Image 1: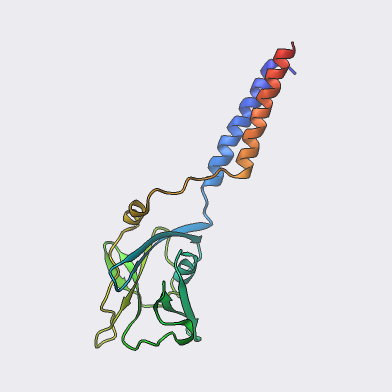
Image 2 (image 1 turned 45 degrees about the vertical axis):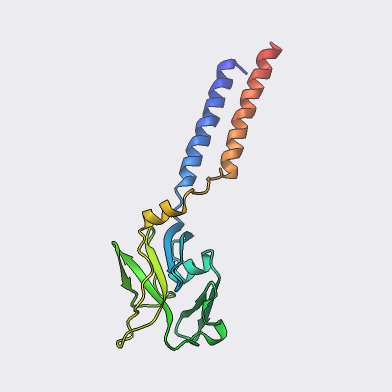
Length: 190
């Protein structure tokens, strides 16, 4: 094999590694949803949750790093407790004066959800909120979680995890390095 051919093959392998790695990085099968949970003691839980694109808020909650108790009595899932605040799953509505109020972030203000967590599919980059709340005479929630935009959640929970290359990227890079090593060995042998 000529020296030029080895150099060209090595460059092709390196370029293929770069292009395949870039193409696989654009994942359209998942989305990221911001989650803000306000607790009665003033603490909060902020998280960016990665889920499939068709995931509902209920699936976001199940994928989050929280202790979640739910009950489904035939009308969709109800949030009973989060991190031990609320009721047991066996008696989800044990507290007649409080419930987990569910919100969508609209710009920089919370909007009470008109549907349950199992009925709503948030968009990529949306922020969903929950707060342990009482209710007024019209059964509207009286407590909201603290307001955080998606960017503010990201900034608050930084540093972000380091991305790990895919096996195919590593394989192609290894192939390119093996080609370079073969070239060096051939050159030394001459």
